[in-house]
Image 1 (cartoon, rainbow over the protein chains, first blue to last red):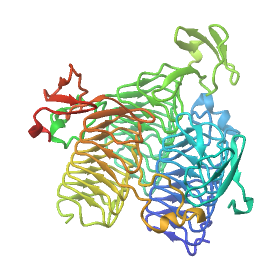
Image 2: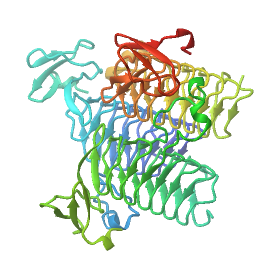
Image 3: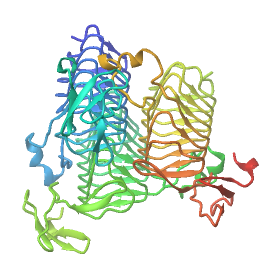
Length: 203
Length: 203
Length: 203
């Protein structure tokens, strides 16, 4: 199933689930049981663990580790230096006081990154969260709670600071509506969330 | 002395001091003069420098560099994206204006991470500090001063925000005492520090 | 042109532009079209992209990626875990809604790091900025605007907190002047900037 994918000669790929036209660059390690879709670009020194699921058209910059429990939907951008996690209260599983907790898998919390989202450079995503579609996590943000679709989140801990279009441009609200100055897509706000007016164009 | 350890074929291990049942994963580089104890797990893309000392039962997630001067005691968890340092005012040693300082080793400040501690995802540990036993450094925390045993530290710069049990659960104080809701261990507070009531159970 | 440089056997170097006495360590990847000067030290697991320019006497610690558009002048120190970027509003270029933006190169913003500067551990440098000569970016700082020469910048977002000498020591101003307690260099402040009194000694 890795036919049609490019695997750099120094990369180690132990899964068959790599989609067509995906490129896996130098010194990457993709474990058995990981799944990566089509037309992705996985930069140097990345690690993808068993159970991680990466959709189509995803860009993952260098040096990122995608752990078991992390699902990345289509078209996501993972900047360099993003840190995923899958445990909210980690201890060394080899530590006597913590061994009971790691006998099972209840410690493992899933993370979902919605379609088209951006995780900015050096951001940290705590375990068990959902990042909405097309959300934009700013550089260095420490994300400790769910982020709605099309939301911009910044800071430590991350707070919502505005809305972002599908195309990556920040939206300027006029009352309850916004029209992207870049691509022209129209949005309507409903409380703390926002969505394209024409839902059929959402993806 | 690396008998009984697992070394991934792509890892480079130049020390003999790797304990039994320790695993060193892909693309790691452990220099001559580094020391790693028993039953440790060192994830992909890690680097351990000469003079670094790692105890037993330590878990180090992917991509971490453990520099000369860093000592990590038994049972510590080092999350992904943790950044250690060993110089408080670094300049390029090749820079003329800084060359005098790097002619000796006074610039090198030791860091000690106490037994059972957790260093959270993306945290940064400034040089010359001591992280107490079972302390818990939150994700993204920038640690600029010593952290007491069993303390929870969060933020940039990191501040103490509470206490954590050996097992990883946050403690709820009732007056000057606390009983862990997870493992039942009892604690007594003394000023800004806390310790198990039954010291013989501390480790 | 890589004659006189040391290239670790596991490093991949695809450019001819590596200066004499430069060392490139394990698992590094330097692309065709990248340029690195003399007497540099590039730690393990680094990546240098086509179009990145690195001067002489530069120290780059482990695991850093130097992207196209990033210029690093002579004598700079790049601590571990620094994150460079070259796009201010990234989306996956494979995402339909963002494809038009990535058809050209207008998205790529250059970053310049001035001679002798220090980028601290875990700092993030947004795209399109200039870090002045001998500036000192503190550990964990998220840099979102230009930083003047000799300035100390800390926090998320980074703010100016003082001045630093060429040698790395913080300056104590007396009125509008300062003399470094370490190396004796004299400075004069002019508004929010500072410069050596004897400009001929500046480098």
